[in-house]
Length: 322
Ligand code: CUA
Image 1 (cartoon, rainbow, N blue to C red):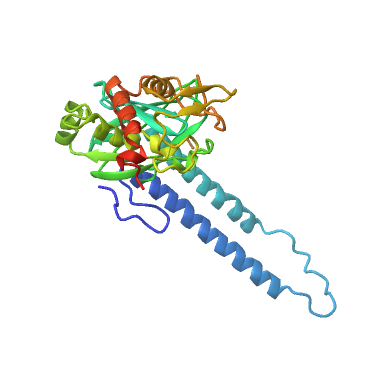
Image 2: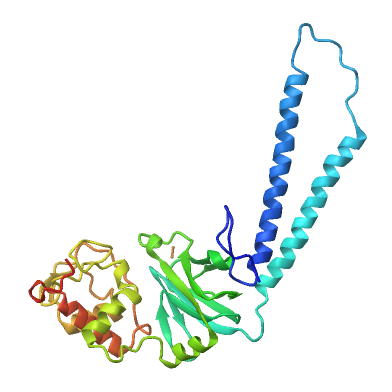
């Protein structure tokens, strides 16, 4: 089992690879610290020992020491070989995905993470995985370069448009871990944050069975309120009237919206649906066409729910969130 306490430099390690990554990190850190201390101490010593005192005497004529030369060539070479072999072995372990891994498709886009499970379930900004099982992540981006980073698992991998990248991990402890985008990808980069929820195998099976979140037993409006956060609308759209990367949802339904180019359209169900599935068909004046499409990410009932939620955000209903 890995060290789960963390250190000054690293958060607790909760994947099978974390122990090895940390050991190598610590080796490099402490070796560098010792070398740094030795070099600085010798420098200070020589500066004092051989400082100019009165007239410069003739030197001893010694300008070579074969033992010293060999020492400062061989010791660093050995250190580098150790770091290389150790690093390469760890790199191979991190690169070779176990055959029995669960494969989950990860899609990065401005500015959220979407996860597709083999069972047909999909989620946004929440990756749910079973503990003690290898998980393979097949990743790509719909727009710019993002980077998938889970500090507790010690995995970080760029997510690219037009090609797939792969990483894997096996979590060793249940719990919730932060998922960050660690490649600057535009205005919403710092909010491209998700969670990895590690659960028991039993809970994982139940969760898949339930189809992640079906919204069963909720009204469309309540279901939509949950989706507003879980599908990452919250990143760009406020519900209290404050401006964001995108227009606020408050008091939006039923108005006439002025679009880029000067035309205006009534904000009704069809306009909202179009904005979710084909967001850049018509862009509100004053905003950049940066919204990603939710085509394939949201089911019909989820779109209905989000529309119902937006409709509920009218002052008259007292549901404005203020
Ligand atoms: Cu995506 Cu930064």
